[in-house]
Length: 411
Image (cartoon, rainbow, N blue to C red):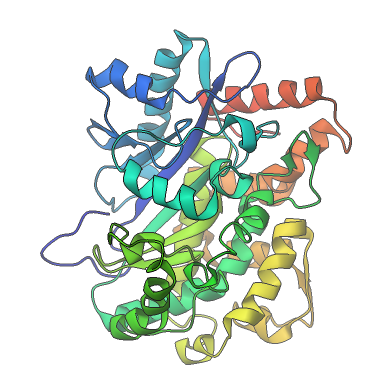
């Protein structure tokens, strides 16, 4: 999200990033050729391609392309066709090499230990440092495609409200967005395998991720002291040349970007098509708006939750998504659901009824599809079965790639 002289206020705009893997059209083998894709368009090797309202970029690995809003947008639905159009444009270019884009948050057959290629061009020094520290040949590094939502705040007061609301909502998001049930050719037991792998990918330096759910900090000064301070100390022995920005090294499920007055949400698995991604974004924004306006519980009560308690709920949700049974009555009350227990799906159905009036018609339809038929991960497993052969996995994921090209939801 680009910085401006006058910071955007709460929910005035949204910045959106969508990540996809480039794969062989027939075998689905990952293809580390995003640099060639960019060269086809610009005539040179670059890390960013300007395309009007949507930009293409790359980070860390050579098989992932990211599409993002060139500027923060006041209308999420307005980008549905913009993203879909860019997907079609990329697909047409890749098809000449027998390649295509693959959706979902994790490639079901990718071997990160033999197929990972670190981006060798711009920003390579940063990626090489990460690779030296952590060895980025793992699912938690090179096989995780997500949606990043950037939401603005104008000052400390707005930051406190937004950060508090996001912390509380993070555990529920994978119930809607889980799309990564298969790794290494078999179901993992987690519907959101991307986030399960992500939880462990930086265990060598715990301060970089903390407890995934951010600490309950309310000001920029407090954030620098409680979050960036420990990150800097942890990185110092490895980053002797000072090339790493602490904001970049922060790996929590939502990170404060004070350089652009935004909080970036990172726990959203990418779906099968832009329409589904943007519908989930609309839903998240609508619920967060209600939370910051004290619609179901005061901001003061929201602040009381410790990150470890929220992480426990998150870990349950990434395993069983909408079927997760939440028995914490106080947590349910934070969203206006006065029941002793409820499934995550029941809670999202409740929230959908509460906020659907603010969703676009397309957004309502796409979210309703997820609530009626289950997360994408559940729909994938319904097609592959519990013990799928490689051929069946390839068949199902080719259909998902077709959903991406045609911007339609998977059933």
